Image 1 (tube, rainbow over the protein chains, first blue to last red):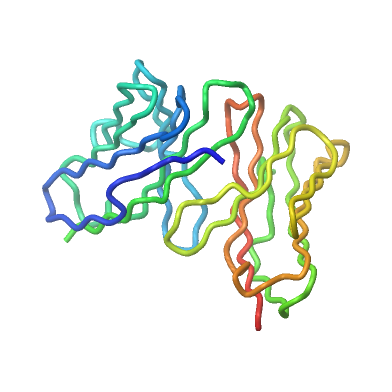
Image 2 (image 1 turned 30 degrees about the horizontal axis):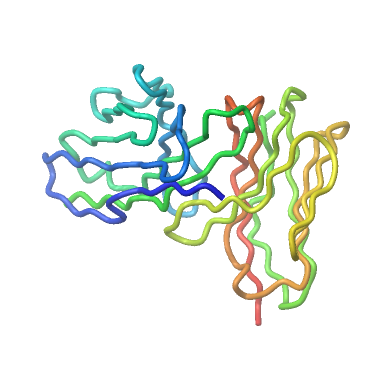
Length: 116
Length: 110
């Protein structure tokens, strides 16, 4: 299957700092990428949908100024958690679908953010 | 009614058992159906992908889709301890909106 790489896999930061997480599609062009947040033993919570070259669409209740998403190319989307606070500590996962209309969705390995 | 319903478990079975995991859904527009396996602290891994109704087999895994009943299943034969994970069903309408079930936690006991 297609490969989606997510980096870093684990990051620890101080409260008030910003953290950037990268999501790359390695062997296909991803016109659409999705960002999720997952709390322990809970399902995926969609945060936003990112389309290459346009502004991300955020789900209700997700602060777009807090979680900045950039999808500058067909293989890279970034999520920046700005002015992180301990309550932002979570597991963040990206996924990507290729440009064809097949419906397959591939996930990155996830990034664990711990804000001290 | 939730768009996708899935028994969260946990489901515990002995090694070698046949496991049946199921999801029901309400939106008849879904055309693509997927099963993902997620190990703890890892991203979901695509296991099976099916378009429309029918069966699909891959090794020990069989996916079934019954669109008339809005019901999908994943069967795991000869289950192994390494199959212990959370299994998420997902469905999509023409690859646009993806909806996930809450996941079923499976434990295969040696």
